[in-house]
Image 1 (cartoon, rainbow, N blue to C red):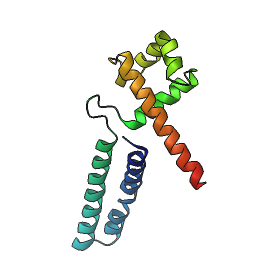
Image 2: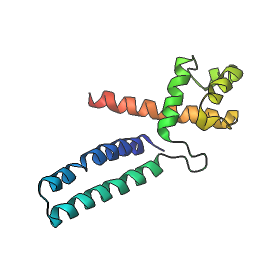
Image 3: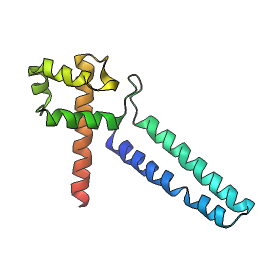
Image 4: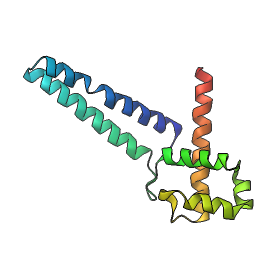
Length: 133
């Protein structure tokens, strides 16, 4: 799971939304060719969406990079600035972990890994935003 994969996933969501435009064109111009065009656009973008979703999903634990980023944000708001603080305040950290449905069975090491991944992805995406803006 990398920031590039997250960006690809965001792009696939945008493409999914845009793929309905050929369907509206088909509704205005009822021909087999416009129907085929709309079906192909929707099928290709749906396939791309599924592919990118798999790229941002952890293979064993089945959480996504987006969930990891959201969890890291929750941790930051709760005062967990880095892994050392998480280790020092382990009990509070584990309470925050148990409040997330996708992590309810995680041990401390797995939860810390989710936090670190989310932090890393947020930093990379923030750096890329600042470089472009």
